[in-house]
Image (tube, rainbow, N blue to C red; front, side, top):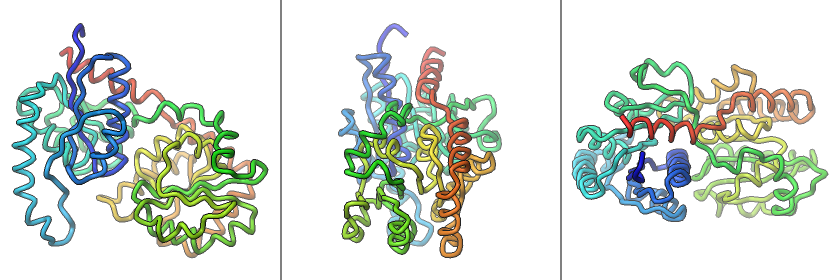
Length: 364
């Protein structure tokens, strides 16, 4: 392409949709310094803060998902959908994009659907092993579907699928080099093992309860903890901050916490899995049972069946957590095997490969 592209990116609601979109935008900017990039998100969601912080403009739509139970929001959904489709059309007509990219979430549904109906090239990026409703619908009309897992032909047209992996931040490609800096930043002891607990940007109540219940047991094993409890729970759990327990709502420098960690307990969101694959540390996944189609469990199982991680379901935690964790801590061979196998499943060139596909559909 001779001229710099004009690109709309849309995806939001959670960090799992936002950060891949920002990574794609950064790669486009690296290739085309004068590219025009506009984000479209849901006007009351976290993308309205995170995208401007990353240096990009964003337009908000009045849209939200359908709740599983009858609520006022559900009654408003048809009006929100009409509003978001109308505004998406207005945004596209004004911005005149060469391509529209969706990374999941309800806001991306409206703008990608409108773009496809206007014959503008579209690409969707599906992070999970089991797609959400939005991407399943969009996949029929999109020019390209970039995926992170095998066997998605039952959801998307086979000829449109390209396995690229999920976009991750470049600073995660060599986290081993960050170990000493990470330990120093958090004021921890380099001679004692470090457990990293990740509950996602909002937090995970059941994981927080698990750590709270077992915190003295973990300390008695000489283990230090970096505990990302989520912004919804920080006020409740900050009382546990101490020399060997660091409680934080959100982690900005993931490369440093991953570098410092010896073991990880995490939810099984698609972005977390893609990041942890690059990190190559032993991981216990505790999937959220409260997501559509139980996709976190399916994501985690795809790693577990390859021997790359351990899976505990929330209903098993009372009985199995301590025996499982103790067995991991006491077996250095198991730690190495899990880390090495997980690392072998990583797709470190995902962001670049996705932008290659963006260029291909723009040229066609």
